[in-house]
Length: 326
Ligand code: CUA
Image 1 (tube, rainbow, N blue to C red):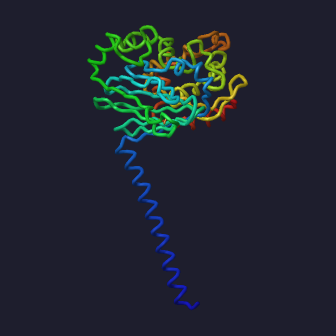
Image 2 (image 1 turned 90 degrees about the vertical axis):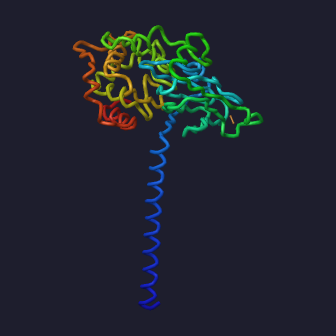
């Protein structure tokens, strides 16, 4: 091969290299663009949720729609061949809603037509995502993973109503798939901003679906807070603040049991609500005995100051590991 041939080959190599890089950039830009314009969001899958465990967690033992603090909603959905439970739900327009889903038999899908939501429901896994329905109407839900002979009948609906009509239907007891909220929580929190926040109400409305009202969680699925929360405070007072704001994702061990589910962040709760629920968790279920003297109660300012660092749930897990927590 002479000098000229080398030169030609090198030129073509450079061209292909440039072409490859340009294509890569175009793909990244397209993906970013579609995520932004289609209200893209990340679906969190997190660890284990065996069918037996799902039966014992309130969220899935009594699946359905729960109104939580501040006019937000939690939806628990159990998929099994060949239906979603609940299959038909109703939500008010504009309400931030956190969906938790699991399959108790085979692979299913959860596709909400007309939205970017399209989730794989893997048996033994927990999936969750946040979505706000910004427009009125009936959205069809379909299972889009072939799951057996009646797969095509595995459908549901989500009806999105104006808030006033939603409240009317609620008062008339006409909302399918709704689970009664824990006593007085939502209305009390929404009503008077000046009234002190009851940490127990915040906990029962938001956290108890997984950790249970008695703080026991469920072995293998959700860690207990009873007998555990004070050790987090003692490791680092700032750690529970980060975990509440930003969630936690990664394998942990609590009281000798392994957990791999992800906890979502709760930054959408107010600083006062977060402080109240943190203090409640530290004192409830006999935890106060393990807290020791000199406990410094959490304040709304603790949470206000920790906002804006925009940590991920995985970052919180790294902090947790650094503190030497198992
Ligand atoms: Cu379930 Cu297809």
